Image (cartoon, rainbow, N blue to C red; front, side, top):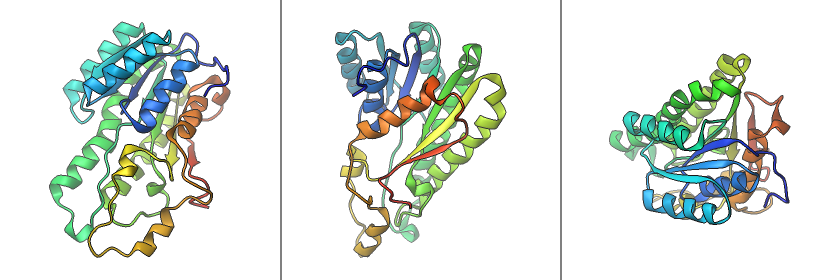
Amino acid sequence: MSDGLRRLEDRAALVTGAASGIGRATCERIAAEGARVACVDRDGDAAEALAKELVERGTDAIALACDVSSEDQVDRAVDAAVEHLGGLHILVNSAGILHFTHTHEETLERWNRILAVNLTGTFLVCRAALPHLQKDGGSIVNVSSTAALRAHAWAAAYSASKGGVQALTVELAIEYGRQGVRTNCVCPGGITTPMHDSFELPEGADPKLLQRIMPFDRMRGPEDCAGVIAFLASDDAAHVNGEFVRVDGAMCT
């Protein structure tokens, strides 16, 4: 809940991975804080249902079906969002996929797909959005993971992709910071999402390795991460740029 905060009034935001998990919670949070929202997701029907809910609550929202690994789809989605919302001030890259397997059994096809969505997709959306974000100043918040900070067993492709997201975040912060665009990322861990709920140990995996990725206190909902994202997107974080914010219950402490 935003507790009555309206830090994002008159801001236009685009959120990828909007249909579920952290993306959905972020759409709900920033809409509650006054932002107009483009809900972007590969699942167009689920994005449409969310946008309808936001409109019923008084938010200007649009749903856009998009696979973020597709250059053409990304460019069309960003253009449509800017046209409908009248500009773009906030970008949240939350789209992501995860698969657990023994690294020696990972396939090149699956490796490429995870990097295409998690890392290349983040790049493509940033690239398309940056010309618009530069016009009036803006904020990018990328969703990385504690997997980029502390190795997660059985997730070589995912960890590599999220490490790339962090490197990209710092690069954009330096390159565009003087042009009025801040770029930060959150590193969630111990957050309950549909992606987390689908977790299964690979055959023969050592369950003791799960202790490395357990939060210090307890699992939390995606709304806890959405609150941090809303802060980073707002002027309250005007002097925060190129930062990684852990939202993990001390998992990586």
